[in-house]
Length: 311
Image 1 (tube, one colour):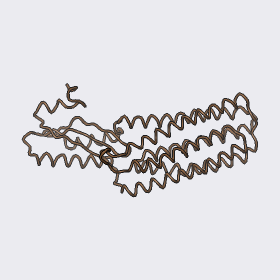
Image 2 (spheres, rainbow, N blue to C red; image 1 turned 90 degrees about the vertical axis):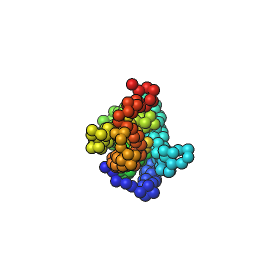
Image 3 (tube, helix red, strand yellow; image 1 turned 45 degrees about the vertical axis):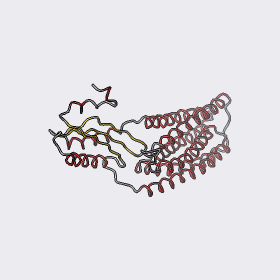
Image 4 (cartoon, rainbow, N blue to C red; image 1 turned 135 degrees about the horizontal axis):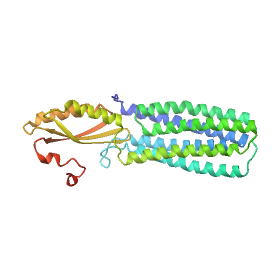
C-alpha cells in the first residue's frame, strides 16, 4: 500500500532532482572529456559520449516532469502522466545512437591502435566523475520509485549503468597501461557499446509497453484480486477486470454483479467500498466500476473488450 503524496510537493522534489541530474551531467562531461583528452583512450571517449546522452535526456526529462504532472483538461481528460513514456523512449533512443557512435570510433581504433598517455591522471579524473554519477543515480532511483516517476527512475537507472560502464572502462584502461596491449582499449569500448544498447533497448521497450497500456505488475494484480476476493460471495461476483498504468497513475476497471433485488443505495454502498480499497492498492489509482444484476444473462455477455466479441 502506498501513501498519498502532495502533488505540488512531489513535482517540486522531482524538478529539483532533474536539475541535479543536469548539473551532474555537465560536470561529468567536462571530467570525462578531460580524461579522454589526457589519455587518448577511446574507452574514455565512449564514456564521455554516454554522459552527453545523460545531459540531453535529463534536459528533456525536465520538460516531461512539468508536463506529466499537469492536471486533466478538456483535451486530456485522463491526465498527462503518459508523457513519462516519451521521456523514457527518447532516452532509450539516444542511448542507442550513442552506442552506434561509440562502436564506429572503437572499430577505427581497433584497426589502427594508438598508445595511451598519462593514464594515471586520466583515470583519477574519470573516477571522480564516476563517484558523482553514483551518488546522483542512487537518489534519482530511490525517489523515482517512491514517487512513481518513470522519467526520474529511468534517468537514475541510466546513470547507474553509466557508473558500471565507467568502472569497466577504468579497469580496462588500467589493464592496457599495465599490459601494453593497445587493442584492449577499443575492445572495451565495444563492450561498453553493447551494454549501452542493452540499456537503451530496455528503456525503449518499457516506454512502448506503457504506451500500449500494459497491465499492472503481478504483485499489484495479486493485491487487487485479494481485495475483490474479500467482497466476493454468494451475492457478489466480479468479472471483466482490466488494469493499465499511465506513468505513475494506475487505472482499474471491473464489473460488479449483485442481486437485481438490491436497492440502488445498497449497490452504490458496495462499489464505494470496493473502489476505496482498490484505490489504496497503488496510489494514485483511478477506479471504474460497472454494476450489473447477477441473474441477467446479458450481464455475462460484456466480459470481452467489445460486447459483440463476447461468447
